[in-house]
Each structure stands twice: as structure tokens, then as C-alpha cells.
Image (cartoon, rainbow over the protein chains, first blue to last red):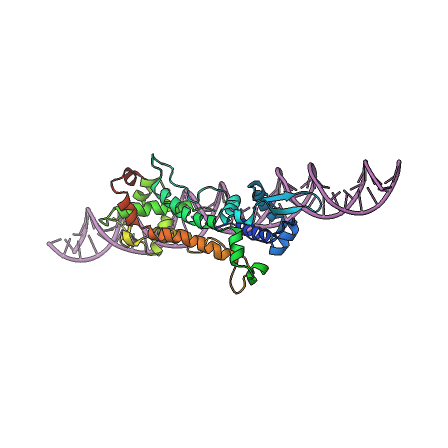
Length: 139
Length: 139
DNA sequence: GGCGGGCTACTCGGATAGTGTGTGTCCGAGTTATGGCGG
DNA sequence: CCGCCATAACTCGGACACACACTATCCGAGTAGCCCGCC
């Protein structure tokens, strides 16, 4: 049980896109090179992000990707759900009765605690908090 | 990315064991039958729980399993870590510098939020909250 | 009656295997800007 | 000078392959309580 590499790739890429505040389009190849991500695989992740309306993909020459919303409106949770799916992390027991599975209910609450943190963390808040930081430029 | 079935099995089994407050030993077969879990597989999960000191295994005739601690001292987090391992859910980037990976730090915080909830949820608190409930008897 | 050995019930741990998902690659199809060529 | 067309650069999406963890099963080995029979 752990987050997939695809999620890691997506988060890094989205952060990179958010730093291009002027909204210029960036090609798949550049995104892949900057973070040492296999381009073919990253393409699949970007497709998912695009389908969720988080980024825009432009075909043809001078095409590329850019954010579809303001960085303040894109949370980590949005990105993670776009990649991993929005199914709950925990599948409860089969023989569920009218109140559902007790263990499952508890795990849902635990997951909600994590989701709430991720929903409150937007691309903008991360960049602002780390402005001028060495990290943000080279990671 | 989701919790394994093994975790589900372990949580249910531990809850069942906790309800045997008199500390009688319960055989692997009975535990498996009560929750419709394949006994051979459950055995592996119980081995992990035993190695983490959460339950005691008694060999031989009239043997079986019982909690090694009081239900109030066993949290959901203990059980989950025993099964899934205590590694962080998110593996950050490889090229980490002196401050680590920015994305990874955020994900660690998110995971901490979930862990904190799970650490505060003990077998005892779950049972007390659902005492007399239909669920607790039949799940 | 007491002692010992076999029996039974159970756990422990390794070996093995199927299965699904994550990860990665490749390639063809479709799309758009650009530049050159002809009118 | 203007418009059309070929080309290049790029995305899109499916097909495919591989690795690895999860899930599950089976079996032999070891262990502990119990009972029966022998002394």
C-alpha cells in the first residue's frame, strides 16, 4: 500500500507548471526532462489530469500543456484523485448490513483526515510558502 | 493505492479478539470461519501481528490466539503498521537535497494527519462506542 | 497409583503459484503552426 | 503580395510487455496438552 509513482510525477509536474505563471505552454518532452521522468509514461498521467480538467493540452506545433485553472484552485487532493482515482483507500467487508461495515467507517474517517489536509494544500500555497527557496527551483 | 485485504482481515480479527475480554484462546480456524477469511492466509497475518507483539500465539492442543495487551493499548495504527509495514506511503523524488523533497514533505504531513486519527482509535474505544450495537456482534 | 510414550490438535514457516495493478515502451493517428512555393 | 500546401512538431490514445506485490494454497516440522497403557 503506497502512492504510485504516477502520483509523484503528477505532483511534481503540476508544481512546475504552476511556476510558469505567465501561462506559456510547455511541451511533454520538457516536462519529462526537467524531472527525469520517462516521457511516454508521463504522457499517460497528463492525459488523466487533462480529463479531470486540471490542465489543458494543446496539439500541433508549439503545442504543450498549461494549467486549466489558477494555482489557488488546484489542490493536491485534486491531483491525487485524478491519478489514483477517487475510490476510498479501504474496501470494507462484503457482508455489509444497513449501517455498513464498522471497520470501514473508521477507516473512512481516517482517510477524511488526510484528504482534508490535502484539499487545503493548493499549488499556490505551496509555492508561496517556499518562495525564493532553493528547493522550488531545482526540485 | 489502497489498503490490502490483509489489513482488513487483521482489523476484523483483532476486533473479534478484543471482544473476548476474558482472554480465552481462540483457534485460527474459528477466527477464519467467523469472518469468512481463508485460514491459510489469515495465518500469515496473525504471524505478523504476533511478531509485533500485538497478540500471543499458543501452540499445541487447546492452543490459539489472544491479545498480548489490553484493548486500550492497541490502536488501529499499530495493527495497520504490523501488516503493511511502517514505511511512509509516499516515496519522494530521488534527487533529494539537504532539505529533502518538497512534495514528499507535504505528503508526509498529510499521512501524519491520518496516522494521528488511527493512533487515537483503539480497540477499546471502538468497542465502547458501539457497545450493544447490532454491528459489533455480527460483523 | 504413578509414570512414560503415543496421539491429537494446533501453530509456525517455507515453497509455490495465480492474479492484478503499476510501470514503461512503442507506434500510428490526428492536429496545428510555420515556412515555402506558386499564382 | 496573397493564398495554398507540404512539412515539422506536437499531442492523443491504444496495444503491448514486464516487474512486483498481493492473495492464496499446500505441506512438513515443531510443540504442547491429553489419554491410555504399562509397571
